[in-house]
Length: 418
Image (cartoon, rainbow, N blue to C red; front, side):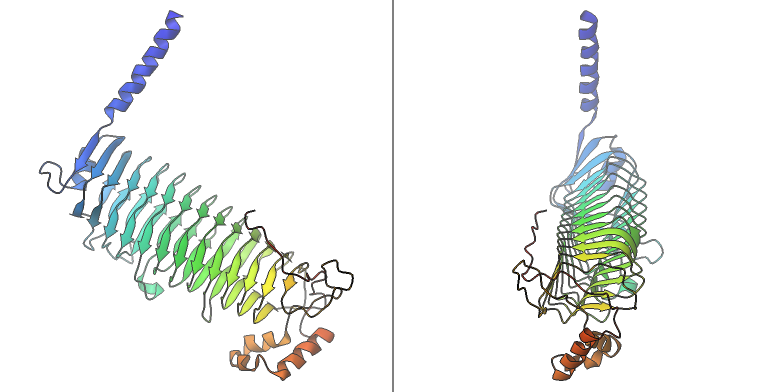
């Protein structure tokens, strides 16, 4: 018993001692001994906490090579357009509550306000970034958090601007509660897997609100992508999940709520697509399920450009879109059953909630507009109604089996909590 007590006593004192080694360093512009963040980082020991008092600190290239917690108390770091600001090269680093301005511009080095390199267990939280090139740039890192940051850019075109939050070869990153506007891509992931993108707002960005390249097993939930060049682009990726998001007001000749290119084995459900030129644009994507989504007042709800097989479009609401579906190709191997179509003109005599006649969701006029956009001025004309009706009666340009065999009579009430 005495030996056991002695063992626990030793463990307790070792633990107490290890905590006592960590100290708190105060940085203040009025402190003659420690008036710069760089100095504090240099003298700090592993696991110390650095508190940066209110003020403006003109600093850049703050390189962190040991575990540290760096917290601002209303401090601003002004990089004076010289280069990067924080450069993290260690595990277990926290950077919190800073305002960061005037990041340098470089088309070779991609200067960022906060760069995290080859690190894990990091926490980038509650920072505000302005006057940036790139905002937060993670590379070859994992098991970290990018939470509740605000990024305000001034990008006017994609050639002279960077991304708000960028991940390159990263895994298991939580990107949550961030606000990004007016950069090239709001959030960009390349070769980054098992990441969670939740409750972010990305708006008014030049290219994409959210962009994936060669990334797998990522989840996008509860986020808003508004008035971007295009909402979300997923390219050359698989096993993705997107649910409970809002894609709205993404207008332009090449604007989409969601763009899928070479995407496989993915689930898109319980989202709202409203007022987009095209809600979903699909090309070369297979085994993708689209369920319990609302497509409201879009130009095209779904534009299937070709080589899309074994996809399921079921239990969605198509409400007052100019065109619900545009389909390229004569072969249909996809399911379009059990949706609600606001322009369905059938009936339900047996009152089972399912239309007694099948619904053909494609209008022939959608092909005309796709090839000759100026023809849209005839959208409400009698001539258009006649050619659309003739295509429904005797399909020539659309696959004969592209029909909804179980059109819903009433709008589907989605449980957006599931």
